[in-house]
Image (tube, rainbow, N blue to C red; front, side, top):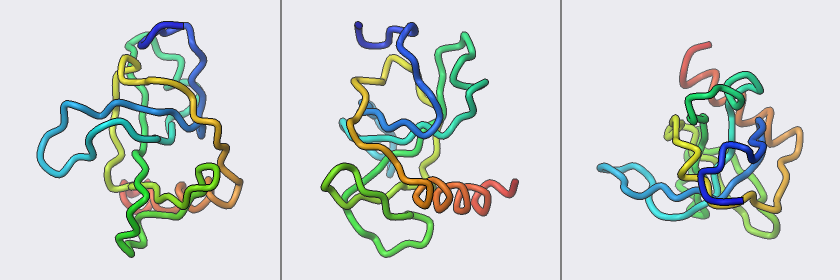
Length: 116
């Protein structure tokens, strides 16, 4: 499967390695895990865009960065950096899976940040 191949199945709450370069300002950059947070509908749209939250291993002690375990790595979902990205930025699926508690924590923060 080639990079950006729309035939690969992207689904909500999957974790993917994503290339966030080029970046602007304080946006996260480089290759890093990101959590797909769009709905099934949005993941299937033909526009080649998905909604993702980048992750970091840096603990900034922010309540808007819920902790997630990516395999053995303690990481944090940077919900304040929610963004639409092209599927061309996807590199490969991450092996880690989120727990229901991690998903609920991310949902809670996103609802606070975008007032839904």
